[in-house]
Length: 77
Image (cartoon, rainbow, N blue to C red; front, side):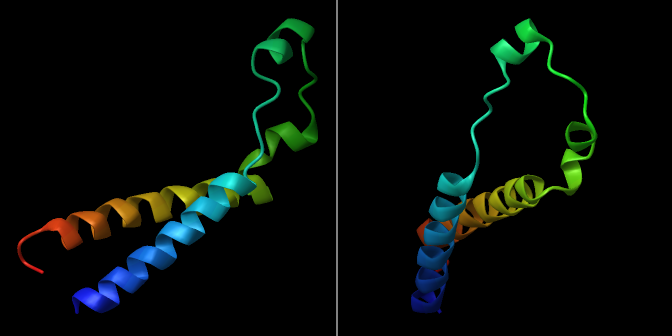
């Protein structure tokens, strides 16, 4: 059981690293507020974009990573 959980842990860690590196930076932070970026159709519908899906999957994999790490370090395994 511990071997299978370790393999899943490694796969989750690799997938998490790839997704974090794949995410785009937030260029419109401070400069966007100074220049007054336009509220476009794309910016209003960001929750349906590919980037939003990647962020959700990253959060889920991060939580799974922490749970599996806690299980592997516990005395029950």
